[in-house]
Amino acid sequence: MERDEDLIETLDPAEDFIVPAAEPSRHAESLDEEDNTLRPGFVRKVADALERGEHETVYNLVEPLHPADIADLFELIDQEDRVLLARAINDLMGGEVFAELNDHVRELLVDELDPDEVAELAEQMETDDAVALIEDLDHEDQQAVLAEMEPEDRAAIESALSYPEETAGRLMSRDLIAVPEAMTVGDLIDFLRRNDDLPTEFWEVFIVDPKHHPLGTCQLSWILRAPRSVLLADVMKRDQTLIPVTMDQEEVALRFQKYALISAAVVDESGRLVGQITVDDIVHIIQEEASEDILRLSGAGDGDINEPILLTVRTRLTWLIVNLGTALIAASVVGLFQGAIARFALLAVLMPIVSGMGGNAGTQTLAVVVRAIATNQLTSSNTVRMILREFRIAATNGATLGLLIGLGTGLLFSNPLLGAVIGSAMVINNLVAGLAGILVPVTLDRLKIDPAVSSAVFVTMATDVMGFFSFLGLAVLSGLAS
Image (tube, rainbow, N blue to C red; front, side, top):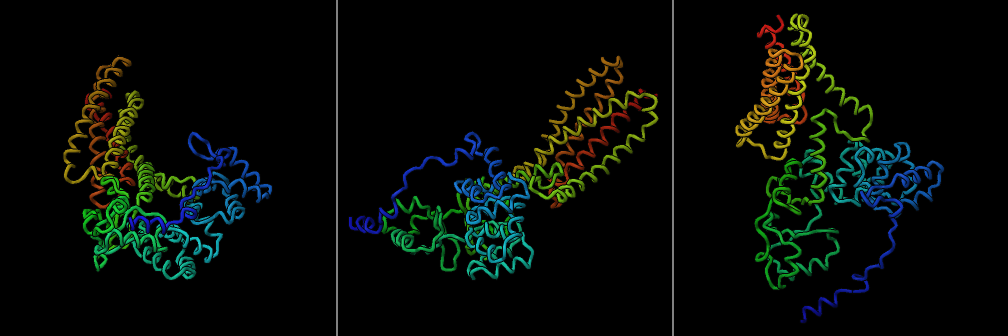
């Protein structure tokens, strides 16, 4: 009981536990209740006030919004109004808002700030968010910003920037709590209460040895329920998932997903605890990586609607030119059979069906395989089984489609031989599509080339070339075009 009384005396209800009375929602006018997005009418009202130069009105409209909603507002208004909005709500533009901003929007706003202002923002942020703010700056601008920061914050940022992009070292936060295993639960609770320099939010405490190697973790729920006299070594969870500092962020996300982690310790090459990654960071990574793979399959680049137009054109045009080259290869195959097409013009009408259906089948397989590679479902252990599986699927689909298109063509044009030729070509091209859809991305992955970036070009080329060649070649061999 003495311990309980001491606990009661250390807490001041007037300061710590009085919750303000609930206020009427101030977001009803701005947010759509169904999808929690900013209402078009609200966005227009802010834009109109900016155009009239009524900065006080703009401030009053934006002030009730959550930082994430303020970040969304910057994406929804015209690009030329974004700097004006930032100036109108100047003191609302804290680290929380900048942490939520789209990368391209953030770069635009940061360019308008002096180094000391950027440094002040970075010091308000978690380490990983501060790194994201600074890493895209030019080297000279980075050094100018770092020179304005407190030595401790600067050292943390410089350490993070020393790691490769999109690795755990860039993603991790250095704001964590690490204590020795010799502590008791009571000692830890007292330490947490008396220490003002703690992370704002945390879910677990890391237990380390004298060399700062992680030994285990204690969740807050365990700490609160355990007797004060119990040693941390007796209640900590020793089995933990350690993240190497150089691990790719996509692999980190897969580990969080596989083991249902809330947070995880990050260790350097010597096994020392250097940071932690929390699930809120992983949510962004999962969304980012999934979107990235989908867009790369189409050659659309980042696919960000806030990306500069010239950069988007350059990215898309590069892959369109590559596709143009593969299309010329397919056209050269058709050119080999121009005499047959001249004698039997119906071949020119039907051959796009074979190549088009093969392309669709290849794209289906490719999408499944790229996802399987990205999520570690497809590894060297089950590659052969996956190839056989896709071959059986391609054979079944090809036979079904071949039968349908063969019967339909034979009846429509009263030419059974034509139906047999196009049906056989459909089966062949579907088999090629299925095999290309898995072999191309697997081969590129083995060669350490991102299969999401370049697989689609090769798969499309394979199905186009084989679709034209099989259909026109069978037409010639069968005597159909004699």
